[in-house]
Length: 473
Image (cartoon, rainbow, N blue to C red):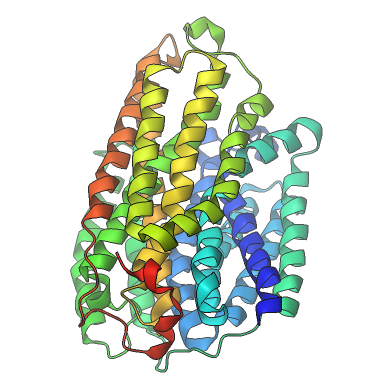
């Protein structure tokens, strides 16, 4: 197995990076889509929203399916859907088909929790923390690199090229997973909770639609209020159903254990802080010089400002793994949150020149790499190995919910704090202040994560795959 470890980790990490790219590759293209599709700007925003919604739904559902029916099998099918969605986007200019393709692409977000679960099952104990760190960091790496890659492609090639690149990469990784990654023999018996899946899907769609579209529809609009009310009604019904099931979609009794609950709340606020960094950086430097603070850079230059952060995240994943093995995952998450907060302090105080903007964005990315890579290890110390994909899928979902909230906050700030038709500098300062506060909140959340009690610790022997020093908090 040791000889196959490097390719397994590399292949799974590549799958996580490629599907994470789907989150941000269309952001630089949004100004082009109204003309391409003949649709209103408000309508083309669904090209981004559809991926977020399908990813949020697919992540916990496919994570649970992977635990029950085989993680590698479910991962392969998700990559097939990503490839089909990419091809569909590349072949059409019709907005409904484009949204359908983006919906299929979003299904690939389940690749990260599935990959983490596979690594926990097949790697030797001493390699688990490193493999999980690299796999988890791909969420941030892909999202950070997506903006500059898409911007360069748009600058020098047709917009369809980005989707063809995604299609080819998805197929190549699918083949690599099929050839190099073994199927885990660790599965969960029982029947899939289809009713619970329908309920969770409805809750996530209603909640995320209300959050992500509140800036467009109005926070007090009947649609947003109706979606919020429907969410509040469905949540207790769904919880009641899950608690009655012998094999629930989400084991809520495990999810409310302090180590798991606090780690998931930390994931939410860290996801919030991370995504604001990605959304604000490129837009800030592209603001016209007439605003008094904008640099008037091109779309490509704006995207390239994120590249140092993406590279830093890739390089720091192994460092985070070593730190987790030495000091424990909660110290790594806490350090990551602290670094993110310091990065936003730089952004708040020195975002008038290009070098300081890039520095602040890179520091935030460094903190994100540390925190993201250690969050799954923090959770795995308190869950059975048979629930790894479902539990890490829930943690990934919490990051995505945080990102959705961040997107709504940024949109509201940039659309309401306006001077002469352009976002004011105070809008960006508000984004940096709120995001820095979110990172600060993650610091105590990580530090107070308790060591799993005897009743909380996994009872199945395969959980011993985790390095002892990583599980110790």
